[in-house]
Length: 71
Picture 1 (cartoon, rainbow, N blue to C red):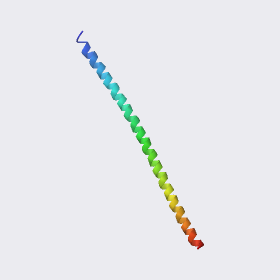
Picture 2: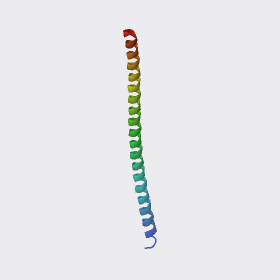
Picture 3: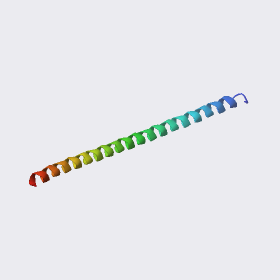
Picture 4: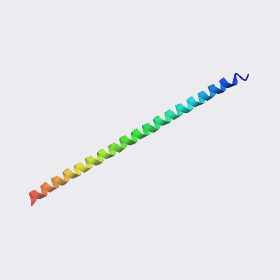
């Protein structure tokens, strides 16, 4: 009977390690997905900000042109 216990214990340990690795891999992919979504959101925010600043500058230039024509 002592010879049957080590293979059983070994297979149990291998199964536990496999489950831990699978769980860690799933956790990493979830974290990576969250990071990717956050990066995409940040990129979108920065692009929208740049567009607003561009429109604001264009609007200011148009106001300057209109002011020069009136004077």
